[in-house]
Image (cartoon, rainbow, N blue to C red; front, side, top):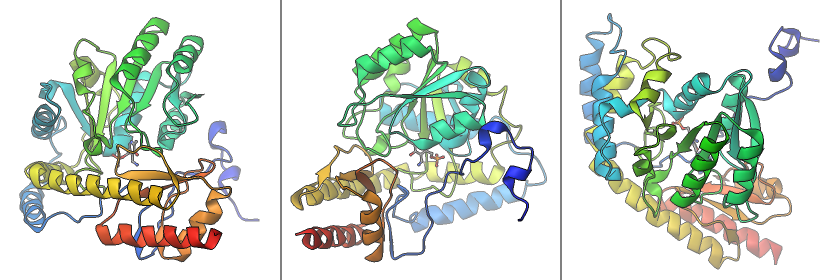
Length: 368
Ligand code: PMP
């Protein structure tokens, strides 16, 4: 028997658990991790090279610990696109929104504290809770995957969590949470504790509706988290950020590692922010493709959850994993998120989506 994890003195709550991991398989069409299928445009690649070259000349020094220039540009982007004034003092950035969420849980969660999410939702919220020693409470949703607000309010009143997660548009289901529902949960969370409410808007640029950023006004316990991984087509960059009351930005400084955002990351993100207009143009194409996937799947007789994201949840299947495998056999990788009866497909290029719809059509024929 070889020496393994269980032979090490790891924390009890990590024993027998598996790490997060969508399969990274080498297949022709990969529509499984909600990435943007479009490589960055060449002028942006050139600009990144230029900015990184400049940064490289100073790599003997630590980077700007407070990432002031980057946070200023992110604040400008939010102000322009969400129609709500956001300043550098409202914005914080880290290595992916996963790290933003980790810093928030290190600050507001932790041993003896709890966080609630309404599941199925983004599985990393629960995993980061575990990693930070925060207790996890799985809150309810309706059958159609919308948030069951009265049941959620009840769960918040009963458990009095320190952190409430609301993912909108939600992953893996795709549907957005209306502002009124978020407000109701915020009120419930303030009455119960008060606690922090984290609105995870990783996919908001793909939404039919508006960002919930304006809700920050007068709500210091609300945080909106965002990422450059999806709409900006920069999943490899690892850049996430949040907008909140300046006190929240001050609070996360207590847990962030010094110089956590490398000079190379900051330079690359700044270059990308010079090209937001082009990148948001791709978002428009992807929204059209997402709507085509929804319509195409419905035409074929599948059930589809309403989508405001760059992916679509479809079903229903008696054995979704067997269907996942059959789609994979046709060269298309989609995602089995473990939601019984459902699978998720990311909107790719028109050709990739055609390949997926062809596979979905084949499967229907097979069943007839
Ligand atoms: N939030 C949600 C809802 C997500 O789906 C993801 C990525 N799958 C993230 C956050 C994390 O994204 P990143 O760390 O790449 O910013």
